[in-house]
Image (cartoon, rainbow, N blue to C red; front, side, top):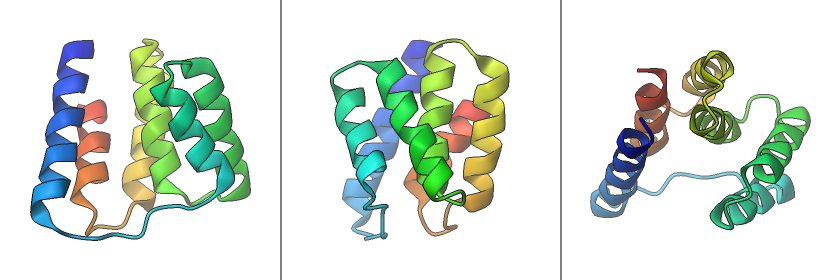
Amino acid sequence: MKKLISIVLFAVCCGGVLSGQETKRPESYNYWRGMEVMQGEDMAEALDYFEKDIQDYPKNGYSYSWIAYLRCMTEDNGRALTAANMAIKFLPKKDGEYLALAYGIRA
């Protein structure tokens, strides 16, 4: 399952680079700090930052996407599904990268 998620994430990232579309991504401190911590592979701390971002910006589909991803990686599937559904609800429809990530986690 982790390999599948990693492959989907890689494909999504490559697709965004090739498409040339620029979408406005969040610029909040907690979102970017969560991204940095997640790259350092501290999933619990990254999850805390994304959840703080959701408290500040409850309609941030990008944070919901990463919460779904992190919960899926820790095999908390019920909460991952809930976060993926919220991400799909709040993400801009033109941002195919993150929508694909959310749909992949939901699948």
